[in-house]
Image 1 (cartoon, rainbow, N blue to C red):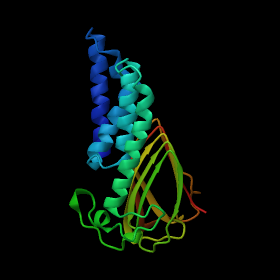
Image 2: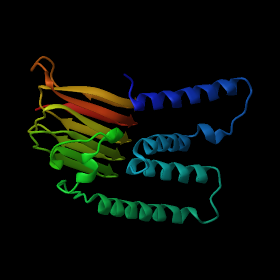
Image 3: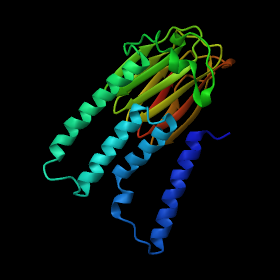
Image 4: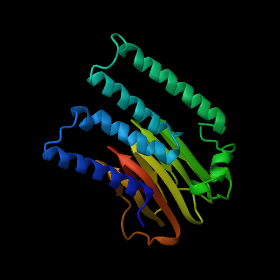
Length: 243
């Protein structure tokens, strides 16, 4: 069954293809429609719709795309450009502070109070288990390392934008299936998992690499311990490895 990310990516590709076909028939489109800031804006909208525009990745992409789209087309008021980046950083900082306060997240890795969001999964499904069995990581213009020793790992969310994230699950364990939703834009995720976990990829990728570097045939995968990766990777990569 196709994931929501695959369907969304398919729609974007169809729209781009249709626009290019119409252009061949002499229908003229403004040059900015096919510019790289528009790609960032489209990706920001896709990720934003998926997360109800509460995901930091979507806001960063929308902000960067809007800034360069306005600047490249000389729409910015005279002298406004030098103020937009500082103002944008201030807005992003305020958003992160408010988001942290609302969710009650300890960004140093303690998620004992991160219960409201973790208890309700996608499509309103109820999630059971201790909140410490989940990951919620956001790496924006930075590098972050996290380690989980949960013996009943359930999954979570990882957002990486212009940065890197290292997740060590080598001493963790899971019961049944865990789902880890990732959003990677111009960054990378390195995931260390036990060699006997069955890892499945359901991510949509654009100019990205998703690779399982674990040594084959060293350990037969345990079908009862399955980690599913979903989400999107754009101009980045995901690497799976084991000790």
